[in-house]
Amino acid sequence: MTTPPIAHPPETLEGWFALHQIFRFRNPKLDLSRLARMVKSAGSGLEHDGASRSKARARKSDSAAGWSCFARLIGSTADVMVIHFRDSLDALGDAQDALARSELAKNLDPVYAFLSVTEAGLYHITAELARAATARGGTVGDEEYSRTLGERAKAEMGSAQVRRRLYPDLPADMPYVSFYPMSKRRDAGQNWYTLTLDDRSRLMQAHGLTGRRYAGKVQQVITGAIGLDKWEWGVTLFARDPLEFKKLVTDMRFDEVSAKYAEFGDFYVGRIVSGNAPARRKG
Ligand code: 76R
Image 1 (tube, protein in one colour):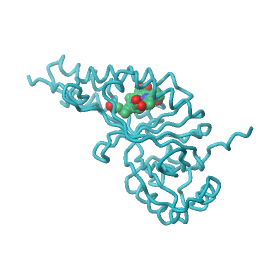
Image 2 (image 1 turned 45 degrees about the vertical axis):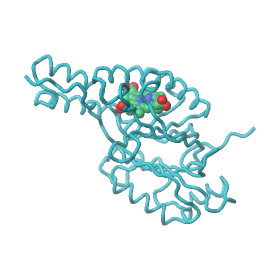
Image 3 (image 1 turned 90 degrees about the horizontal axis):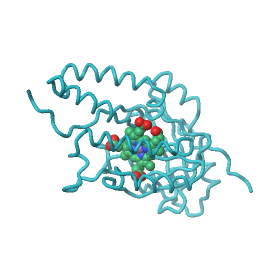
């Protein structure tokens, strides 16, 4: 009998490819309302619209599926963030080209871009199947493991909760957005990637419980970037109240997995100016 490796990756499910583009105004006189007008005229599939979302759900193979949204950044080193979700890397490239050809792009200088894909990590299932494989004298990845995994993954793909993670909506009532890239630590003596799968599964379960306290207040989109970017994940949060970003991320800092293993890039915070974000509250 071969001993299963101590550390192996969790199985993951992927959905839409994602591109976060950060720009600075070339003309410092640009403001929010002019940006919103330019976004409207950039058009050609770049704006978020409900129709492309439901079409995406119904026909996952439709290469036009997905959406883009534009945010005005506040208090940042940059001015605009554009987030595109599309169901193939090529479709994402088309969205990138469409934006580059628009009037709006003539007014923008690129500052940063982050390429990733929506991801649901199956820690719990992978850990369970790995334990079962060991118990029956098999190995991770053997026939029985792969067959059961296929069934479990299919069931997960059918669940509304997982589909929401893989094919996220732009929440209609959450106009604020916070985006940051992150990685898990790989220091000697503090290395996420050498923890056992059981330990990682336990930590991620606790992470999920902490996060669930923000259900209805913050919508998170986790995108995996290993092999696509320098950072390992993108964290995109939408909220009705921007203070919820601070509260959630503070709670996460004290949650064991972030406290011990998380490393962060720059944070980009702003307000959605396109799509179905509600108008700014008056008074
Ligand atoms: O309910 C579930 O089973 C989903 C559990 C879940 C996973 C697997 C979950 C829930 N997350 C998962 C994965 Mn998350 N998340 C972050 C950050 O700032 C920080 O300290 C970390 C940034 C926040 C704020 C956040 C919020 N999550 C991940 C991953 C992939 C890691 C991996 O695979 O190793 C990362 C990098 C990550 C980071 N998480 C939640 C939240 C919130 C609010 C929830 C609960 C809401 C929900 O269930 O959708």
